[in-house]
Image (cartoon, rainbow, N blue to C red; front, side):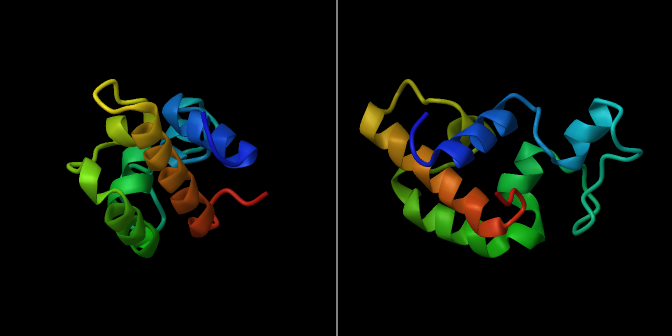
Length: 108
């Protein structure tokens, strides 16, 4: 991982499905339903990063800053892409972390 330590940990938690999105909490019997309160879809990493209207502004900036690596998916955003070099993967990881930070979902 690269970037800010705190957001690197959040990035890993999203990757490992052990973070706070409602679907992960629901799967671990810590919440009664898996749905996002903003879009009423199951709130998982894909919803958080790619679909929820709540994160629209952060997502648009992330898409603009990662344009050379499109089409994006949660796999490309959360895992190291073996087709890219370390610098390119670091750009994506840092952009994901910037996006996570800008949503205020995972405050320090």
